[in-house]
Length: 318
Image 1 (tube, rainbow, N blue to C red):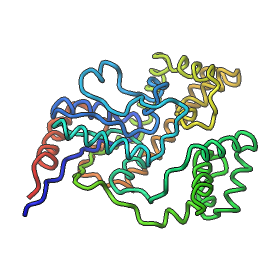
Image 2: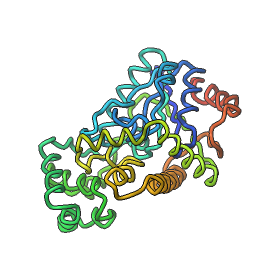
Image 3: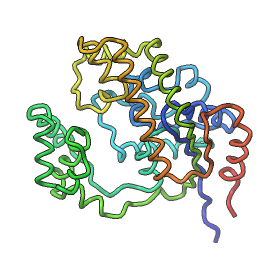
Image 4: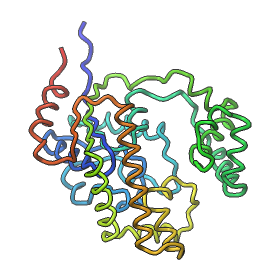
């Protein structure tokens, strides 16, 4: 008896400023798709400009999901995003549309396509306790705690990596087992019934860096400083992931009088270029691409990309 055919899912990935959002939009218009966010910062509602979320005009052209859906105070782990993405993919298929996962957070995409170690959900009370300790005792003290209780994980982290140090301490506190042990458990695998195809944009580094610099300046003109000032006025905990979004730390320092505007822009541009370099390296080694574009996205690539999608994703495999 013939089984139920697998449902198609398109992945559009690449470093920041590579043009993946524009590509996802073009694909969605061509094939009746829904663009589903796979960027760890674009899930936050308060940072539309600085995280380069799709514009309201773009969101009006095709359906978009998981953009700006969480407040700054929420923590969106790869496991939590995976659950949200699986739900969005299912709803998209039920509506007869093509899910197009678009983003540069490689860990999220790998979690979706390969699964995660089955670490139990961390109770909010445990999370809050670890955050309170970080604020009260500082990151260095918490890193020392981790080094004593889970030296294998601590050896892979930097002392100042507050989010990952906190995550490891949360897992230990909630489960009684170190994160390094949980990570040895085989992942649960991809969701059943889905067939993934991946397009990755990988522009030449000089062009990518120039695009990063230009986009940061455009963000400043579009209101990035005002976004950061609104966060500052709220007094959010600096350990929240959204408070470490590209540009936020530099502009907070500017607003505190520690940096001039030009210095803050330069620092934010440098952080963005470094991040783009890390993303490029990560995708090159961690995600298998069925269609690689060694350039920034341009509409001139649409015919070949659309042909690839029709032949490799939308044609039912034999």
